[in-house]
Image 1 (tube, rainbow, N blue to C red):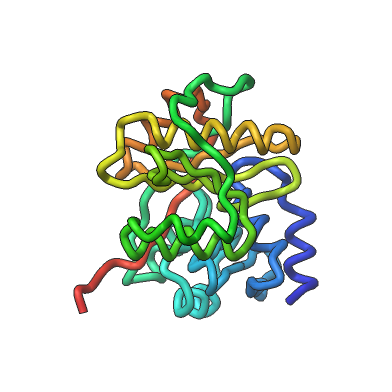
Image 2 (spheres, rainbow, N blue to C red):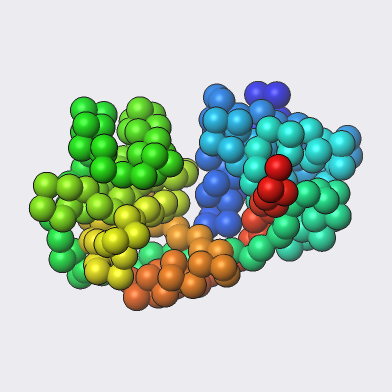
Length: 236
C-alpha cells in the first residue's frame, strides 16, 4: 500500500486540483488501492471521512472505499462512472480557487492562532463545530480564530497541505456571518502560511454561494473544478 501511495504521490503534480488527494497520499493514516489496470487508484481516510478516486474507476474498490467515508472526490474523466457505481451518493461540482498575489486587506477583527489549551474557549460552540475544532487542534493543525470580545466566533484552518499549497477550511457561528469575521480569520491564516512559502487553495461547492462570494471578495482566482460525491441522507 505504501508503494502505491508513493508511486502516485510522485506522479501527481503539486497543483490546486490535487491538494486533498496528495495530502491523503502522504498520510500514514490513509488507505490506498491501485486498480487492476494500473491506470488509477483510490485513496481514503476514515479519520478524515474523505477519499479521492483518480483515473479509471474499479467499481469494487470504489464501493470498498465508500464503506468507510461519506465524501469522495472525483474528476472530469471519471465522475460519470463513479456516480453510476455509487447509487447512494450525489455528485456536485466544486470550483477551485487560488489565492491572489497579494494578501487581501480584510483583517477587521482580533485574530490569533489557537492551541490545544484553547479548547476551554469553545464551550459556546454548537457540539458539531466544537468537536471539529477540537479534533484539528488535537492534530496540531494551524487554526486561526477571529474573536468577538473574548469569544472565538470564526475559524480558519489548514484542511490539507502539500509541498507548496494548502487548502482552506472555514467555520463561522451563524450569528456572526457576513460581518467580516471569516474574512479576518482567513486573511490572518494566509499571512502565516505565506511566511512558510505556501499558497492558499479554496474549494467551494456550487450549493454554497456564500463561500464562492467570499473567495471572490478576497481576490481568489478561479482555476479549476472537481466533483464531490457525498452520501445522501436517507433519513434512517
